[in-house]
Length: 244
Length: 298
Image (cartoon, rainbow over all chains, first blue to last red; front, top):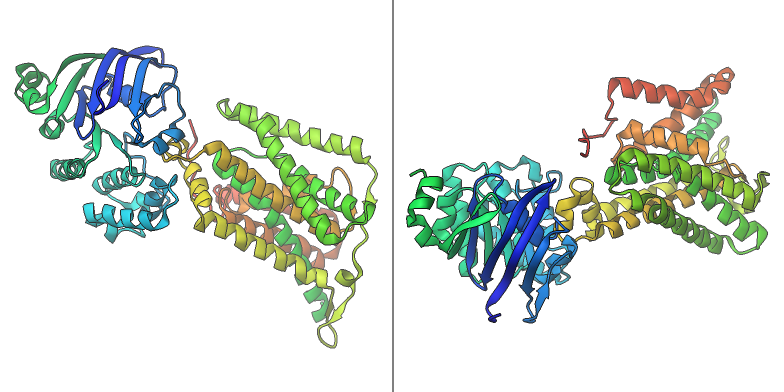
């Protein structure tokens, strides 16, 4: 496996609530890329990302992850709390910020496994630079934020662990088009600064616009794959996901 | 009522209420995280009292050493209860853990009967704690009456600091809302739950020690009624809220002591007041004074 591969998924099969949700898919992510999984509701996107994060266990197949030291590790059946230390962070579907904690506490929680206090403060400043609105609301309870701000907080919180692989599950969910553009612009910016990103999205246009590589999932199977820009022009994708 | 009598009653109520509060925070913290009523909590309180009794009266160790032994002993039992009786049931329906909690409570009480015998034992109070100090012409107080509320409030202050200013405290508050997301942040949930049980048990042990000094005897079922009342205090204050537990405890302490002080012929109903208070709060404000609405975990 070439050195620049950070995530290698082979023949992944996931059963979720008695349904065969993911049926033997292969995904390859190289360091520094934005890779997106697009598809309709129930296509198996979330099942895939949740399996990588260890939230779903007992799946079949192989998930390999190359850590900072360059070793390829098999992720199968590791606990989710151990993923963060290995450099994998997930911003879950539905944002899942802690509504009763302040914005700043939510961010500190993202840095839970770190002990470098000074660097944590620097990273909080970095998140505030990316999302100035969070800084204005830093002492507000997370539950008082608007949907867009909560999404920014969820992305910022995931960044706080300094992940090598940042996984985002439906960051556009419930956001107004203007906000989608803003959040995706920042995702691209985070990527330019060197982070590898796995993006799961229903909003195919937004996702394909920033993705280096894309996979289209349909009822548990990958039906189309290719460069993001390429898929944006693909007639099959256009018809099914981009409104013709 | 004379001024002296009022002040005696006031500090008596303050001390009793603070102890209820100290036990109540143990209920409220575990409930906040696991949505579990830890029925064994009152028995941890009882064990704390027994441990200090054996250490100081039976083995003649200094009180300071006895207190440390009691805290460690009760904390270890609290952790074992979580490990053996609750952790295997984390994924089970909540009613299973509740039944397990009742079982643990019966087990600890009857284990205490077997090991310590059912006979109540007298606790010999250190002289300096109970020799009256003159405050003014007509008022004198024993140091114990001042020490119990002071120590209790200091402990609650320390607990609030842990919960609101430290990293494990942040994890506790996070788990109480969303276990899965907290795990995604790299928090080992079982470890934080164990810490919660350890803190609650240590506070229950300290409450048990102070209780045994105030009412100088220990017996295997001494945890049941203080446990009930502390649980009521936790519900009254709003289960899940630490300040609420303390306020609930103090309310209960004052209602109990002052009702008897002003209506001495009602003293037979002393324990009923707590339950009346519970019924009233459940009718008027089911989430308690400081409680937030807690969604059912599915």
